[in-house]
Length: 286
Image (cartoon, rainbow, N blue to C red; front, top):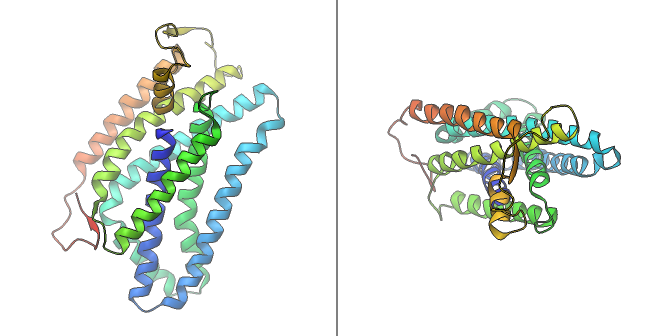
């Protein structure tokens, strides 16, 4: 459950911060009437994200087993692609996020009101769709007899709720949070989470008969790590660890962690130091 909680917390905080920055900026420049237009776009994005999540959950249920596994595996791989892009994007822009959003708001204010609606919808909609897809993939990979999909979803909702509270506290200046450090460390952990989802996605494709090697195991430690044991459930819930892992899963997991992890570390080292300037209220730079 910690996995889905972290996803909800990270993605929810990103979306909530974007909303608070945009709404706060419009309020400071005296454009409070335009705030309503922004909220219409945000509400539309939330509804679309919820509808997308419902489609993912209930859409494939009437298909054959092989078709469900094929769709599940493909969407899991797509979800990993989105979350990987998000990890790098946030690590790169966390320090300059406020300035970029204020510039976008200024541009939207120069045009018709639909520009603000669109800005609100896109700002939250991207995060919402990414969250719905990755949470669906993570929940599908982790739901077992002892860890229900409902429990995993509840953990994600708790993470989102906490993120909203944190964003509100930051916006009010009641909490100081080093966002660069938060997104850096959570991004590193999400690389491990994404690797597990990717491996599970390829296992689904093996189940569907698209990728060979379903019975070619790299290792089987089911006796030492029973899937129903507390530590087996913990490893499954956090890292998507499977006691019986095929060579395809094993290879995919290590390739992703090594390649993406190396690029992530390189991107952090290459990030330019922020210019000396007063920190935004409630937010500290790295």
